[in-house]
Length: 287
Length: 282
Image 1 (cartoon, rainbow over the protein chains, first blue to last red):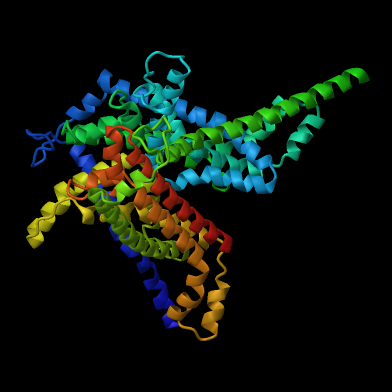
Image 2 (spheres, helix red, strand yellow):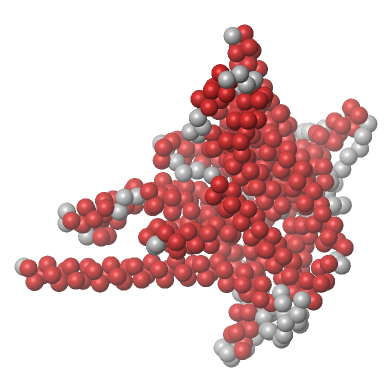
């Protein structure tokens, strides 16, 4: 009996290693970012020590130049998310309707990109679109263009790269929702006189909405703060929040400004996710 | 009236068929979009000229060149070492945490739960810069003051960072495995005289093993593939594979990168097969 009681009091100690690790190497670093975002920049870059309080970098955040980059990142993320959902939803629907064997094969094809290196996949797309790449080679060979087209290093290339990178993440949650959805409900609606469009909008869409919302979060969150894709597909010509933050810790050496930007990005993302968690019931959640 | 209904039904089934065809076309086109670039990449890794768009003949030259590329091999060794160490550490800590959070109620439990999920949600670049600032402004100065050792960014700091972002993923996967876990099996073992230690290794651990292995596999892949957090915690002396690939990819497209990418793709396929085998056993 006393052994039981002792067990109960000692039991929670098994979470201590992870707790220490995450407090030390996750929570504390975030608090340091908060502190640095309110500090003055050092004369040779970095941060001035000891820390001197200033609000300068938060004021700079609302400068139209930086506000513009924030807004254009959000816009790119919205376009990418919309494209992923508009292509992914019908794809998920199709996968859920084919014969089991083919269904598993198609699901595997959607899952494989999860396990492959993101840089490698981005490179594969860059390869296709580059001046000496296959697309330009075909166009030149067919005599359709005189000189290679600039398919890379613009907004279109970045959006395409992001859709390419995150599309698989959009399909799976929507598939999980659609697969659970009872198709006879649509039949019932059409039997009762609704046309297919109405049955879809009034029955299927609301009931599979949790999957769509999960997909939106899974795509929007990483895309709005993306670095690799705008860097590689944009070639320095397309600015997003991620590339801007990276520059503050690279060549610009402005740690306080980079910290303030990171916090703004994090706040935007975390508030969105918390809103989702609050507004959805636990049973409906897919992520 | 009845003729009208018949027409409507026929039109309905026609548009249904059309809809089905459109659904199929959309799905297969999307898959083509996903895989065409990868297939082109693999194809031209076997080209015998430097062109990545015009086929001139078969060769494995680019693969042979990888073998005497010293920086590449060093980066590969670094990546594997970091991935192994961080997988072991994060799997142990993540599993224990999943058990602890599943079975016990304690103070600050909800706050800890939030800390466990937050690293999954916040943008990777924020994790990266926070660790860069932490190591440079707090961790290194503190170690120097306390122990008189001077450290810089390198393999140990990358590993520390990878363990931190791996723990939540292992935790989530093992915790999911604990849902529906039949605790009467453990009680039965203890009623039959097994002590706690023995009960854990003979009952709990084998039942959780698929979840633990799944978590470990995910941690290993995440660590092996990570670019952003690694870039901020690596310093200059010890590049990993993704850092090395990034430096090449920024410079342009070459058949060497194609060959290297193909090797990595094949390695990921191996990991997928392992994960499928694990799932089958579940």
